[in-house]
Image (cartoon, rainbow, N blue to C red; front, top):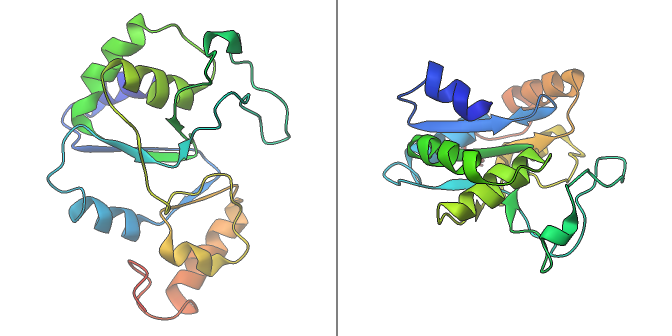
Length: 177
């Protein structure tokens, strides 16, 4: 759905970010990263890599997600990016859409798109520790150095924003002290 929407409504998008509704995104850090480290790069997808080989994918409350038959992955599932938030170059949309049409679907979007489909087009997901990977924020100022914070309520999003503006010290952008 995300790829179809992007192709239809944002066909010239240079960069794409997928995130969940309970994720705080530190846009200053993300934009700085995109305009510096990723500025001239093509064909990349980046986030927090999940690669617990041979283990089932679990929901937040510890129940197995309905990955259609883990026997499809006798050596474990392929590395994929946690769906809470990841970035990709816009030049991947068409290739990933085509790959999704010929890849056996599984009901875990992040594993399907950033693992199976990415592998089909010869793309390795990249990790960056500034994407949270299941870690819950304990203090709002932790977001000063991060791209994403997962499991964040609307109230905590406001607290994080206010803390970054007022009490985290230094320049709130880019984790500069």
